[in-house]
Length: 399
Image (cartoon, rainbow, N blue to C red):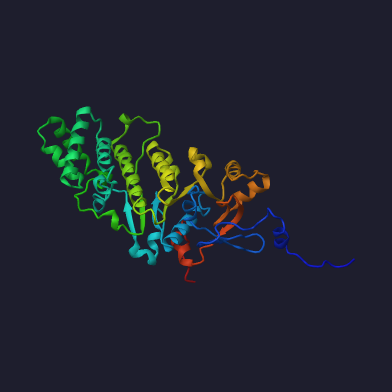
């Protein structure tokens, strides 16, 4: 029997099929990892591609604890910043590590949602709100803080906010002063209630003295830590909220306004918003409103959203707005099957078993072109993995 005229590798043979390809990710852009099966091929991911091409700009990273989704999300944010993008990173636990990188030292700002006096006024609605929405944002925030605003309180607060804006002041403390100086009893009552609340924990964030730095000079990377939030149950009525819950709900509206102000400044510049553990936000109507608004407006503002969660079911009606998907390790067969169906694959026993075994950055990726393939996230530089890992490290032995 005569020998073959030419020997073909598996990759060459596959390339002869018009519909077959091992190419995955973006044609150009930062290196994200490699295909671990067959001859390794580099996988690039350009976070700016989706809004630039008018495609669904949200990318989903789904996986169980320790599967590598948070590390991958931070790697994408870091690469985007190095390429010139503006980064807004939501850190709910908090356990992110962008602030640990020396190269980002002077380029990163941390906003912590806590009652620390150092955070006083960082989210004053008259300072951070978009010009056309500033007055409405301030009124809504103050009324959300009040235990049970009557119609007369609403009128008094609205008038005081209008007077504050008319003066050219960007301080909510000035609004409280104007309420207290009024000769009308509803205004004085509202002022007394706000005087008590404004020094209560998270409420300090909303009451500035007008000296807060302009968002026009915001740094390229903003990390928003949220350890102090105490959100009510989704089904809870407003009149049952505790004071801590009222303040937390009101603060979330300011966080949304802050993020929108950051990403809407310059539409020619790409932005990336990392929303890790979105179940934390989606568990409340207020948090879901934030995620919905950012996802739906992202493409218009030339922004890419990175959504990190444990379960596909957390997304709800947001699933139709997802472009790129990364499926990391799953902790149950049902979760793995749901994730596979989400990217259009049949959940066979072999595929489900493989997804459940994924760890340490191994994932299945569906890119913007609908191609699906296995990827090993590769940070290349050890200091990045050291900064981003959320896995507790064993103490090093000197022996």
